[in-house]
Image 1: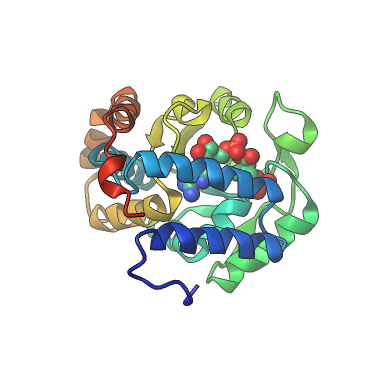
Image 2 (image 1 turned 135 degrees about the vertical axis):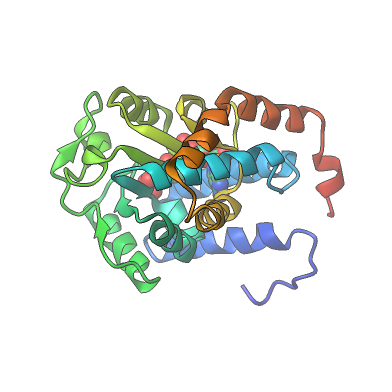
Length: 252
Ligand code: PTJ
């Protein structure tokens, strides 16, 4: 990573690519993860590679939702583990959530590697290895979760979730916080709180809001959640893309 000069106009994007590549080499990230990354980068470029005010409001609503939750779980896949392992562990600490490895392309081997990787980055307990629960309505490989993790959770953070699984979690009555750069994607459209931002920026931003709100009364937190308008957040991101804010961000 240090070989990329920090003043390079696409520094952040190049560092991100390198992390995903390293994730594949370590057996943490799937090859499909590379494709997902490319898709994400395209949207990030169109959004100006910045956190929109609407995404910041979503991050604050997500923090309030997590602080009010009884059993919050942060779902971790191969891309999240490669891109933001410390930040994800830190968010779990900030909101007292469990971490659960939950993969789209499930293999026990990759679950174990990701759990080890999270522990190397400071995680205590990592769920996802038991696989004794299920998300109803999905075939077995896609629906396997931990009974005392995602299955029992009231609030789930699902960065980069697949649309079918987001819908199935919604049908289970979970409150879903989705982080995704594509405002047109089905999973953020299913979410109670869609954060249209790069997970690299969004995960630490939610943690920062959570620390800021740590002493807030439940009524204040509920007010933040009630005020948040998911449809307006999706519209704001789409408008930013259409208005072409990317023209300013293009340093190349
Ligand atoms: O590790 P696994 O097996 O669980 O697989 C994870 C991936 C992400 C490969 C899998 O869930 C997948 O194939 O996802 P999709 O269907 O390609 O969707 C990925 C979505 O995430 C797209 O909407 C991208 O725009 C978005 N995305 C990609 N990178 C980022 C992102 N959103 C936020 N931050 C990113 N860095």
